[in-house]
Image (cartoon, rainbow, N blue to C red):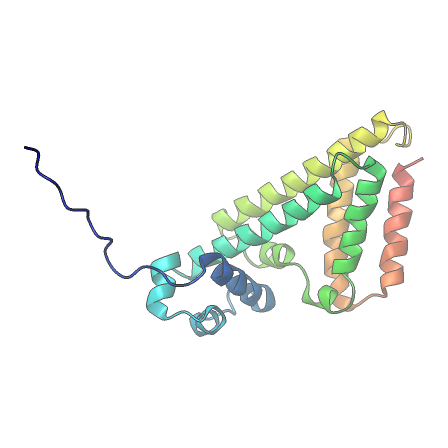
Length: 204
């Protein structure tokens, strides 16, 4: 007769909070204050977690920040995949991509800035994990833009002599620079006109 082994009960109390919601709330704190200016009490207030729950779920402030940065990057890449949807014309995708950056550099959104740009300035040269994440993001963004430009060239929409990978690098540098300029609250019409003028240099 075989002996029954009782089911092992989980140790400790199960989590009763939404981990991803906590990461998102923490992301907004880091986004507003920066990594070094964010203190543990700021994160506890935002996530509504106790110190013990926060450390049990995320380890420490740095680990939570990496989770928040990953969330921001995932959201940004998901948005780009929608803008560059293969079912739409590549030029329309490029215009949607650039117009999205105009929206994010206008008004209150512009003054808030970009978490990735702020993090790159604050930490990328001194934190290897952060640096790798930011480098991967820019590489992924550049690849998506280059693919759209390549499809535009195939459709006969790209100006002769424009090389998609070089043009993609220029556009990535441009939009991230636009996020920095957005902190000074430029008129939206000015940012849009600049975007249109640059894209028109590449398109027939």
